[in-house]
View 1 (cartoon, rainbow, N blue to C red):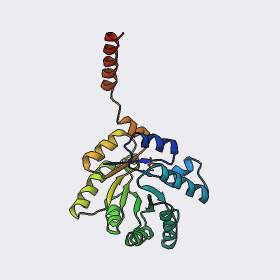
View 2: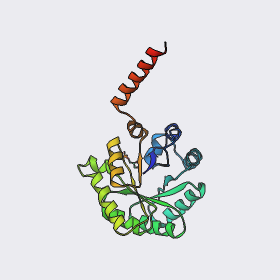
View 3: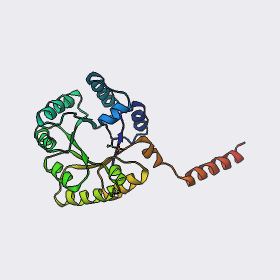
Length: 218
Ligand code: G3P
């Protein structure tokens, strides 16, 4: 499973990249705003900075919601750097745009996916990635992980090339369950990635090993 980090924070991106396990980055307008990155020029510069940091796909989201606007914006984003993947919302104009990008060799990430039907449409349009928001489904007492399982079955039935990018990941169990179900990619916060490394028995065992070493090597 590929690991993407879901942030626009360069320090967190660097920290995850330094672990040697990072395959890519996803951003969205809210994550950019959280880092106070505003204005077209600053946003463009920030995407370039992220692309220079990570050698892998970097999702950059369009703001336009009409077909022409999505195409114009997406082409500009794709030209910024070869790592850029154009993130397009799951709306009818977005589906048309994904088809256009796919036919023209521009990679896409179809975002705001909350149902298997939406995922199927995005895959048929030729999306490179589809992003089901599992945490936001859990937030409304729906089952985000069940959607990953349903999408995996559908995509496997028809051998779609589109990758399932589990998004809105909130905690380590989301990552583990997505891995068990065969999600191709997960994108989550640095905290959830680091939490995967933690176990009290690891801490206890390490403490004991070091204490025993120190006893014999005073
Ligand atoms: O990748 C999608 C993500 O940014 C949404 O996450 O935590 O805002 O639901 P969240």
